[in-house]
Image (cartoon, one colour):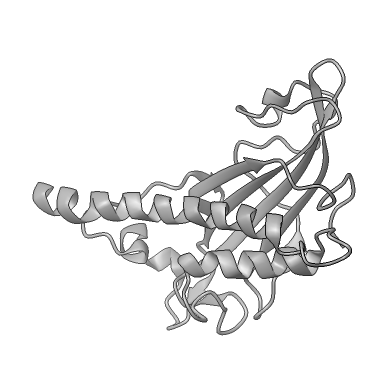
Length: 213
């Protein structure tokens, strides 16, 4: 059992986290470049939705991210990510200017809303940057975007084959043989696995103090 754990489950666990880190990295790269050939380089809500879909193909190839019906999911998990815009203020302070949460759960579309995050303190105003995100640094007048990517799992949802998520172990859901992964975050029946973050300074003209429309 120990041999199976170290030869199969440990590498698989590492691979999941690496894939989620790559999802966040791809989002940053695409957001920085997707509008560069346009006269108006401002990132739109449609840009963000397309970037989210494309980046998560690393985890969900083809149409495996698309619910087969309302909250019925091919892999039991669904994509969800957050975007935070933080503006630097005088005296080494910072403020969260806007938040966007996107998820693919009900039908084949990306919805925009708000919900529980991990590590990020929402709606903080004129505070030290570390109160918003532990490693955040931002200069006066500078804007930074924080990307946070989740694999969401809800016990009251279903796999596409009709199994209820609460009846399937995390070990089986993620394909481990021995290891039963622990959620990075749990609020009641809602949980997140393999959460990844990226902080970046956007190119000129991409973002401002109002969210993409």
